[in-house]
Length: 350
Image 1 (tube, rainbow, N blue to C red):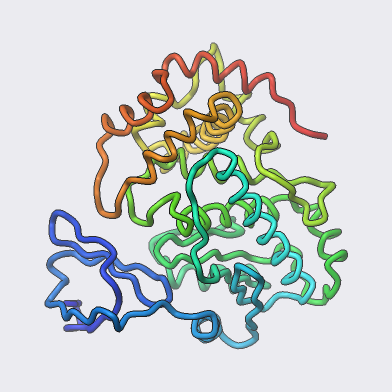
Image 2 (image 1 turned 120 degrees about the vertical axis):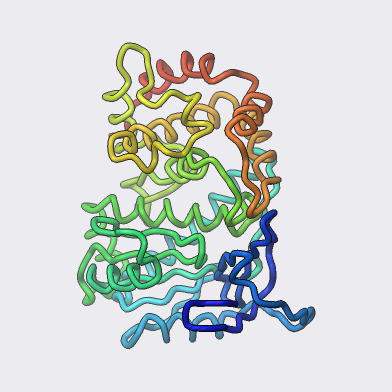
């Protein structure tokens, strides 16, 4: 590829090619890079040579990039690189596996085909906020992460989390649970980002495809509410959100959504607006919750249609709305009239 410093050779598999000649390249670690047509100098076809990194190779890479003090822990479906306490690593490992099982059970009940990635999903955990911020800024310098306890990098296929216990001496899972019981945001963040990662590694969504943000975020928000009685402080998706239900009720006035569904469904700009983002997230949670509970067959059909979206292929607003209306069977205006009173009647578990 052509860079400002000259030419650079990249190795990987071509995931997609755009209409303007751009390429989406995936390296063995699962990281994707989008190259413009101007950056592509030439291509050498070496079919049969490319192989995804195995757990040992991926673990070595994560340890090298994270720095000294990090160790790799493997669960059945995850590869966790961490410098946190032994108890914290075990607790988060159990939580991730619980989310994994519930995620696949959720889609099985809806009769939507999803499948295991066939390789461990990478997670990077930091004991301190400063370490987390430094690493996050290094891989995504274009984004600010202040006040963010974790995120999923679509490009790198990596979940990053900071340990909110701040205590490396915790060896017992019970001690970690006791500390995190007072920090529900930690559990909610891990669940939320894990669902993003699962969605992009199970065939539900394709990385770098033009998905509506409300769907991606709404699904993760639907899963995230913690459960105080569970051993890992989370048990299943679909509980009323203690964060987003109050926001939804507070923001909806005069039977009108602050971000009209006709906009939310076709335009992602509300999520980038400081004024509208809170409403956009609350409405996304409410909309997914309503569709799963009240129109599960239609929601499943909508999910299947979204599964067909491919990387580097733009989807127009009108196409988004048509896809939604045909699958759900209602216009945004009709749906709003049912959504608002339904969400208002919900109650957060005490």
